[in-house]
Length: 413
Ligand SMILES: *[C@@H]1O[C@H](CO)[C@@H](O)[C@H](O)[C@H]1NC(C)=O
Ligand SMILES: *[C@@H]1O[C@H](CO)[C@@H](O)[C@H](O)[C@H]1NC(C)=O
Ligand SMILES: *[C@@H]1O[C@H](CO)[C@@H](O)[C@H](O)[C@H]1NC(C)=O
Ligand SMILES: *[C@@H]1O[C@H](CO)[C@@H](O)[C@H](O)[C@H]1NC(C)=O
Ligand SMILES: *[C@@H]1O[C@H](CO)[C@@H](O)[C@H](O)[C@H]1NC(C)=O
Ligand SMILES: *[C@@H]1O[C@H](CO)[C@@H](O)[C@H](O)[C@H]1NC(C)=O
Ligand SMILES: *[C@@H]1O[C@H](CO)[C@@H](O)[C@H](O)[C@H]1NC(C)=O
Image (cartoon, rainbow, N blue to C red; front, side, top):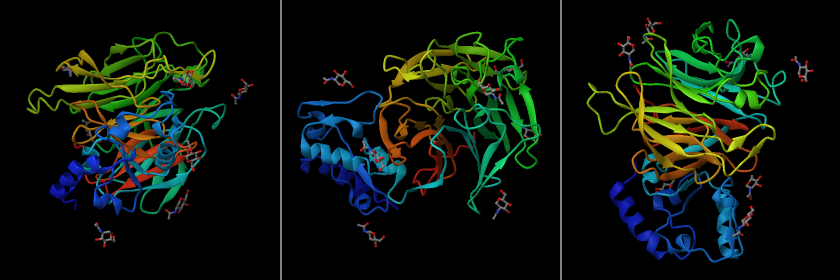
């Protein structure tokens, strides 16, 4: 266990004694089996850099350019780390015993829809889009068995085409799909993780086809929040032009009626719904809905990352009935790249796939507390799923397991 008193007194003094870019780690983190770094704005070497320096908003801070040789050396050390703290709270959340393992090295292409099922101790996830599959289309999913370390390919009955997002709820996998164009429209489906039987529970908005679902979350009342995005069209998985702008739908699980709650000319992607921490009285159950926009990632006519596209993470209040969103506020704009998969932990912390790693964001002050890195280079963090004190990350390059995290992450709803 971390001695919090000692930890905090060390944190309070260490920023003042350092002259280097990186602040001195608390002793227990110096001794960690993982490699840590601490970048703190209370260190004047971080607040004021010697010019010239530069960085693109799409690149991680460690990929910035600087002429100062000693700082450049510290930035290249950042590329060898597993964890970068930007805030002292990150040390307490993650703790010194955490390790990250690249458990499955898979193709350098997108992996999505991770779902850790604690009943079966298995992680369900997908390979998504081109260059894999048949012209990008996948009718199978991956299943990683934690106890045996066995990775297999599974197929549901009938097959699930282009699964893109997943949540385990009530011992069932709830999955959204892009469908496959004229063959099948994007759907919300239920999958039994024991028999792999699939049941479609929603496939239209008053006969209007969905664009291709990207992700979902399920709130504490069991209602669905679905993000319908233009990514499937952009990556050639569906052959019809999308009929409307990317839309977030609230679906009342009692009536199964979908209702648009948010529309963007950027792109809808991740979604996380948490009980409002300021309203813990279960009788009111007001939710906060977190939506990152990913308009920054453009597909057609040219596939590119446009730094002038939207990438802000907004928080919204959801009304008690109907899921009407109000009071949107910019919670955070990613330090770099854009937020893909987004999940809210048991305590309401936000974990987002953010390119170089998974960013942990505080829901109240919006600060990025730190990054859980996936090794740099071509590796890219996309989606996350929580175990109790574990976190699973999927993305370009495969599957990562982060174990022995100090704070409990999984929610009971
Ligand atoms: C460092 O780690 C070793 C071995 O894990 C342990 O015996 C020692 O107590 C640790 N020291 C500190 C300061 O945590
Ligand atoms: C920073 O780099 C970008 C290219 O990535 C360039 O367009 C811009 O002019 C540079 N800014 C400075 C201040 O050097
Ligand atoms: C894959 O795409 C190519 C080019 O659009 C097309 O000719 C081919 O028929 C497609 N294959 C399948 C199996 O859909
Ligand atoms: C691993 O999966 C394969 C099928 O992909 C199966 O034949 C084998 O029995 C599994 N091994 C273990 C240890 O679960
Ligand atoms: C949970 O699953 C059980 C068994 O499949 C089912 O009877 C029940 O209706 C489900 N509850 C919800 C909220 O979906
Ligand atoms: C869902 O629909 C039912 C039946 O119309 C209604 O009683 C309930 O308030 C709705 N739930 C939400 C969260 O809107
Ligand atoms: C970071 O490390 C990876 C893995 O060794 C390497 O491929 C990549 O080029 C490095 N990135 C930078 C900016 O040095």
